Image 1: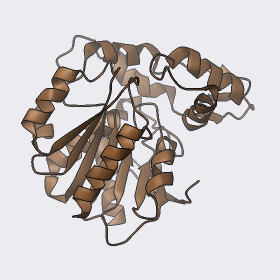
Image 2: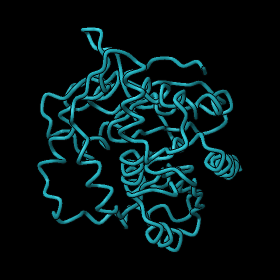
Image 3: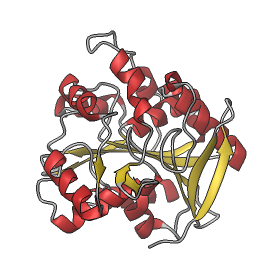
Image 4: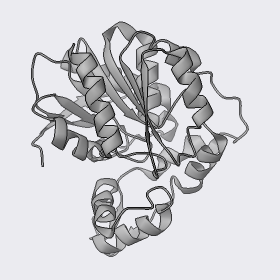
Length: 287
C-alpha cells in the first residue's frame, strides 16, 4: 500500500478535519481527491497505490467522515459548507494550481470550486456525476443514507455490502467486497463494525422534499471549458444518465468520457477503462 502522512486543518466553525497526503513529484500539480457522500479518504487507496510517487494525492475526509470531526449542527452537512471547508484546506496547504478527482458528491464540490476560480484547476475528473442528477438514483441514495448498521466482524460486513449493493458491482468476488468493507466501515468502540460516517449527514437530505426545486449546476460545469476534463461514468449508473453525459460533452469540448461497463454508481476508478482514461487526463495535465 502506498505510504501517506496524516494531515489536519480547521474549518470555519472550529472542526478538526483530516486528510491523507500521498507524496509525489513537486513539478506537477497535486491531485485533490474528494469522496462521495458516505465515503472517506480510503476510497482513493487504489488510485493512490497506482499514482503516488509520480503524483501527490491529497485525499480528504469531509466533515463527519473518517478521521474528520463530526459537526454539532447537522445543517452544516451541506455542499456549500463542504466547499468552504475544502477552500480552507487549499489555503492552508498553499495550493496554487491543482487537479481534482471528485466522486459523486465530491464531483459536485469540485464543480463548485471550479466555478469560483477555474484558473487554478489544472485538470478535473468527475466520477459518475454531472450538473443534472437522475431522480431515480437520488431516491436510491435517500433510501440508505443515514441508516446505521452493525456487524459482528469484517466478513459479515462484506457479506452485507455484497447483498445490499450487489447490483452496483455485479461481478465483484467476495475478496473485493472485503476490501470495500474496510474502506467504508470502521471498528466501533464496542468491537463491532459499522459505517465510518456520522448518520446525521442524512438529515439535510431527508428534510428536503424529493420534488424540491433543483439548483442549476450547469453554469458551474460550463466553467470547466478549456480545462482538461474527464467524466467517468458507470455503464449501469442510475445517477448520471447517458443523455446528460452527452450534453456535458457538447457543453465542454475539453471533456473526455470513459464508460465503465457493468458498474453502477460509482466506479472505483480502479477499473481498466477508468485507469486508462485517468492516464490520458494526466498526460494532458502534464503537458
